[in-house]
Image (cartoon, rainbow, N blue to C red):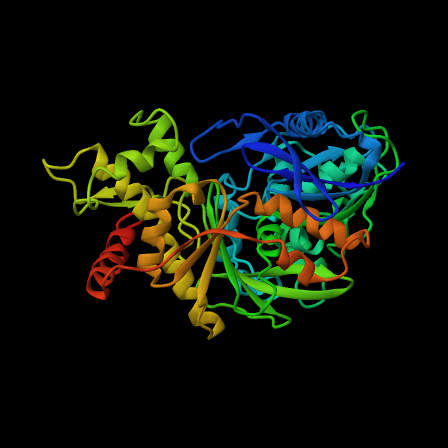
Length: 494
């Protein structure tokens, strides 16, 4: 039997994508399955872990069927995932003990405020590179333990915690493995970036027993082998795990310090590689692990905007002004600009560099002449202007200019958005032919873990760009947009 293919599992916020790739990292087939989210209260967001698992199985089956691939021909599996989403499950049955709390969920605001009042944010920031915000997993774990009275079971080791990668790994290996990689561990508020271990002091502050935490491994480690999955034979090695944004950075071959990417998904995420240098930001950016390969840890700075593509979905589903997401570009292209209308996409609060969980979305500057075309244009502009603030903060923190920006994600198909992004940043924006960069990164790290690929040059050589967007806006116009944006964004949380 010839093991000639790789399986990349990209478990995202609204669905799961699975790619079958050959050993040269060419896409052979794709499967995709959506699943729902639930919003029990304003600002809350949760999912069924079983839905996540079933969507994964469905997408694997689809990809294998479309590519006419014998599952026994899979050489290795790579996993990438929505990161801070928090799952707790029973150690023996592998059944979840509570709904999965999604990274966008804001239910732990009060807990974060209490920790800040105790003046603990500097401690968390120095150790983890993160801030005390409901975004991260640590306070979500604590909330579940409190709400479902699980502290005693947690201390006995009867339940396990994981970000989505750990949960999938546990299911894929029939419960034999409970592990994560450095990138996902670094998003929990429990991982010390200096010692590269779980931090006992932080666990005590959060009242999270360390018995529930997974083993931490290098991103290209052997995490385990499939067992009892059904759609896959036993024994396929799982040799790579990366959080979704790190997988995109890896998939964009942003391997050198100063190289950066932006993923336009549900949110927008800019990452800048800082190499082996551990850079702490005092301007609201996050310091996180880019990847750990064979015990060598590299870092990056990250700016996270909670809402990007989700703003287009809101424009479609809640306002009903378009019938499908891509239609927003058609609508926006009917006007030369937004007609003086600005949009702050704070539909789930504001992430970096503001970190205002109570911020609210704002349309500003509407007149009697404003129509839906202007609103569509303002939504796209708002997504790009968020990224402007993030990137400028990043350059300042790293004391390094980003020469160009590589982009990916679903909304990166929008030409109008990317042209405005290039104009505002005054930088060239590069869009690859393959927008499935996150899954590509998962396949690439798994190929390294399996010894199929031994050089990053091989990964970089495979990337081809579909289009480059060159800045064309005059500087006076750029200043108008950026100066006004800073004034308007403050109105969303004053």
